[in-house]
Length: 541
Ligand code: AMP
Image (cartoon, rainbow, N blue to C red; front, side):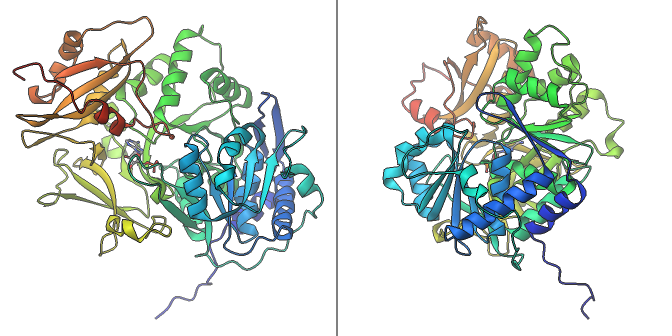
């Protein structure tokens, strides 16, 4: 027997309307390229997004067509997040840090018909425009003259009415598109439905997930082109939280100024950003920034070193919460918070748990497959993490070649190798392609990196597998020292020795100026492995 509930579609217009009806006065603050602050609110945003939806229709946007955005985090980008799906189009966020070759490949693969671009990112567009065909280019400008053939966003929307008749939208219709950063192979498109974005917003707002409320002031430092700033702009609009956008200014001092000035309560970003903030806080006289309202720093996208979590807490009274996810998962998968049943654990065990990736969020199911079958929850057995749920991709956009990432019984293979603690906390030990296999045993590069970064002289560390004649592979540590600091390989080895089995310890330490990174800030281990391919072992390792 069927239940007798309405078949009410889960679509973005509901979130959009709700913000304007109940929280019209709540602010959305953005930092402009010239560093001044722009202030708007949900009432104004509601009108402007409808103007944009009307403009898109007038420019000829047809249902299902993709509209690209090449932009930093700001309120005009938020307008596009809603206006494009309202106009039945698909917003497609582009990462300006990618190479022109990748960007033109992605735009052509997505068949983008229009582009909305920041004035400060026009130089990026200049480099790829010869290889891409779009019908219109609209610039998010600041009153200056624009290149020929482009449209000014403000002029475009000023000509439109602020009310737009929202069509009936099926919840399974596509609303957004984002390509994975992919450290190997061509970027792959993930196509989000309205339903996935709405369910993800609901889950992310839960207190034990990202825990967002209308009392919060949320600053996504994670870019809006990196999995929709982890969905936060949608979540915040749904619940009427104040949003603060840093624009192109992602240096530590600009971020700290903005957090203190706007009373930010929650922020989210990758560990590289938080490490730079930590350095700035350490160097500044106490009280330089009033961060008393900041309840939580959410860290994701790469492993948060335990020493970073500890230093924030101990030296600055700031609480870091680790989350794990993927572009294919909209992106939330797990969040690490201490369950009440574990509240009595000693402080160092709690820290160790908080440094894991955490418990799966509601509506995400996980399964861990080792080579011998399902991996037990013993905190030791490693296996590949698989996931399923209503906001997880079921296929890549136009890419049947990648079908092997999806199992026949309905799971997505994450490519992450994990262990599970007896209480269900998932801990990532590696990407499957980054695991080091030495003498038939697995060594986790992430564990070694997390430990190395705890050494006071180490700013960054990446551990990679290097082919070895006897052991198959052995770990080599690539280390960037802090400015002015020094450390020898022997010192680093002695520092790691008490924490690991002997065979885990890296056989060599290379000191580098910088570790190559992907466009989303992750270590590009492929590049390091290539660099070390001809590494010469000195003797009897
Ligand atoms: P992306 O789709 O670009 O966000 O990349 C997803 C991948 O980033 C995951 O499969 C993980 O390997 C890695 N990742 C994301 N969050 C974390 C985290 N908290 N700890 C460790 N790795 C992470």
